[in-house]
Length: 170
Image (cartoon, rainbow, N blue to C red):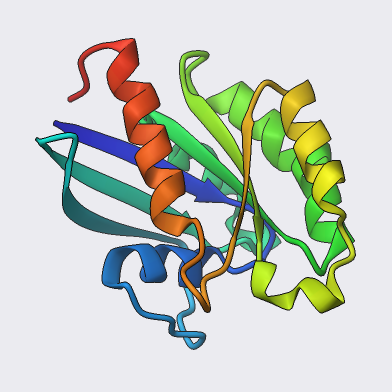
């Protein structure tokens, strides 16, 4: 079984470190992505071997035209923002969510991630704001930390279980 997930959001919100933490179990703040990067991880979930393919894009504006191809043939989209940066949250509603709706299949599962939960003392986007937006858009909401690893595996496990419940994957 194979599932492909795309991770999208503004530059600097921690997409690449989030993916690296999931793939390697380690935090590395020096990861940079220019264009599209793909990472794979084999996991056993509910006694089934699953290949998780995660696509990462640089969030910079110059990569936005590449991002539309990023949505092709994905079963899930992770929309990620930085809880210490309200602009990154506003960009979800003002662009990233609409882009995912436009370019991904209507059957694509979407989840919203408030990243950098380890920086809660610098929080500028309240938990309830993220949760409410996610509910309005019919998405699940998680807060995660690439530094501590909090909830990162749980997000992917949730998505795989939801997708498995929808029927066959690749």
